[in-house]
Length: 343
Image (tube, rainbow, N blue to C red):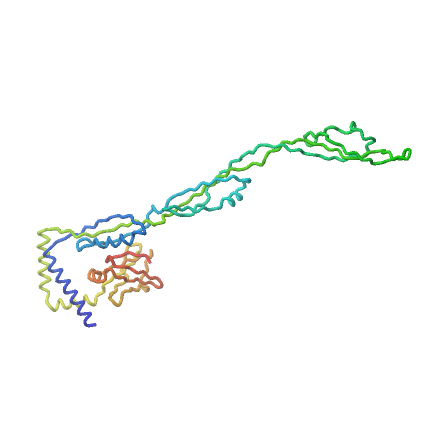
């Protein structure tokens, strides 16, 4: 434990000395620039590796914002046509299917029926012989003159083609049975012209949004650049500050160091209608990288900010800390000393 404290004191002393020596060498202002990138998911890891390699002492990444690009989505249509023997909508949907899968080298998705167009196709006519068989009885003789040669049935002309005679009642004359009356069947036929069944040319349109297979992300990166700004007035003012720092007594320096060792180094804010409000101060260390805000004032928008002092950030850069609220937990990889997050 004593070695750990001694190590921290040495780090603080070196940092203070570096600040004192550095003040006389440069007077800088901070400029923030933003660059935009369009990166696919398959190339994202390589992109981030290259981005972090661009950091220098004077050129640092302040913030990285990532969101899914609008280019990931595309309106698409598929049109299919079939010849069917029915025009009922449900029958059509059953024959085609309610959805259709779209996929190519770049996009994929499921499309749904958005329109149905039906064209009625007439298939002409054909002739058919229709036959009627009519039974008769009680005819006094079997003479064709007594039989109608044509009949009108349902406004259609039927013509006699045959008669089948049969004795109905007989009498015996000279020991022979002689018919007294006849019965039988009269057979009529008509040639009818009938329409063939219609068919239907059905065109179905499927439409919807398809999604990029290799997701595209829009990256916006804020860079913080330290630019030297020579200025005699600034230099004179900074030199005076240096002299004041050098004059600090050993006792005063020790007190400052003890304060820095015990002081909180991490601050958590909750966002409400009137902005961000501080809800907790915490000291993170090698053994304590989790901050619990379960008993702190909650954000109305469920948005929180976490800020880490520069010395601690320098020590923990690239490491992961956690923000905990009840059963919720948010892990943060420290590439910046300020983050806004949603739990």
